[in-house]
Amino acid sequence: MSSLEDAAAAHARQQRAEADAAAAARAAGQAAAEQELQQELQRLAVLGREFFALARRHDAVEFPLYFPTFAAVGYT
Image (cartoon, rainbow, N blue to C red; front, side, top):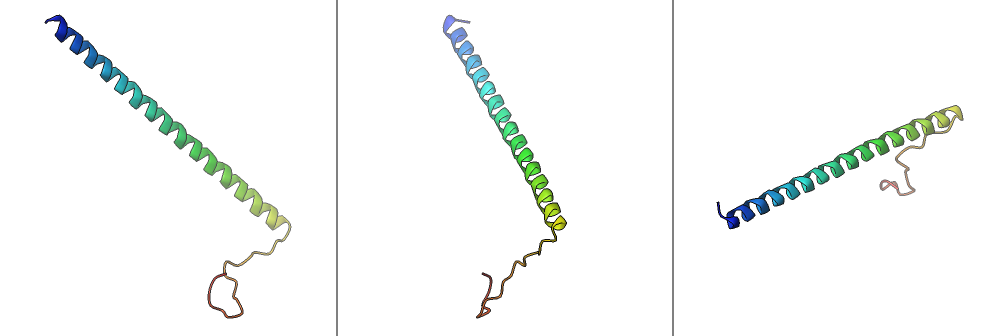
C-alpha cells in the first residue's frame, strides 16, 4: 500500500474508535439516567408508604377525588 492508503486506513480506524467511544459514553449515560430514575421511583414509593402509614396512625380522613360543587357540574 502507498503511504496515502495507509494514512486513510489509519484515519478510518481512528474515526471508528472515536465513534465507538462516543457510543459507549452515550450508553453509560443512559444507564446512569435509568438507574437514577429507578432510585427516585423507589424513594417516592417509600415516601408514599410512610405518608399513608402516618395518616393511618393518626386516623386521617381520606379525601375523595370528587368534590361536588353547588351547581354539581363536575370536578373541582
